[in-house]
Amino acid sequence: MEVGEISEESDGWWWTIPKAKTTNHNVDSATDMRVPLVGRSKEIVLTRLQRFGNGFLFPNKKGEATSQLVVQSAVYHWQPYSKSRGFHPRLTVTHGSPHDLRSAPFALSWRR
Image 1 (cartoon, rainbow, N blue to C red):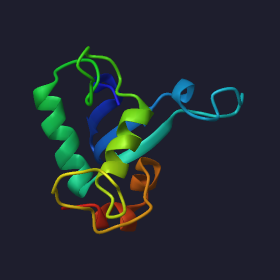
Image 2: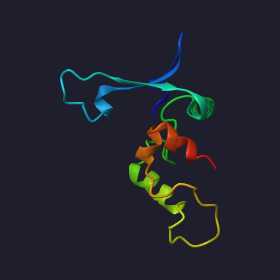
Image 3: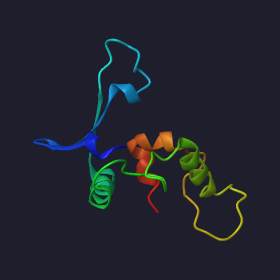
Image 4: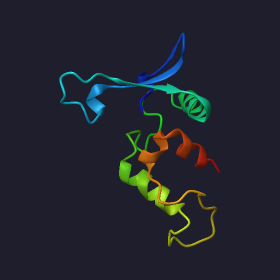
C-alpha cells in the first residue's frame, strides 16, 4: 500500500489499487480496484499516512514494500498453535492468513 494510492473523496476515504498490482493485471478489461476505507482500517491508514508522508505505508527497514513472507511469518508467530518460544499474547483466531484480513467479519476478530 503506497501513500499515492490513498485518497479522501466526497464519499469517504479510498484505497485505489492499481491494475498492475492485481491478479488481473494482464486482463484487458480489468481496471484498478477501489477499496473503501472505513472503521479500524481507516484509522490505521490515516495513522500510517501521518507517519510516512510518502512511499509505502508499511515499509521494511530499507523503506521498501514489506514482503508477503515477512507478514505471513508474523501472523504465524501470533497463532495459538505456533511453536515460537517465549510468552506473548496469541490471536483469538486460528489458521488465518494476511489475505483473510480483507474479509470484514474475519478482520474484526483480529483485533487484540
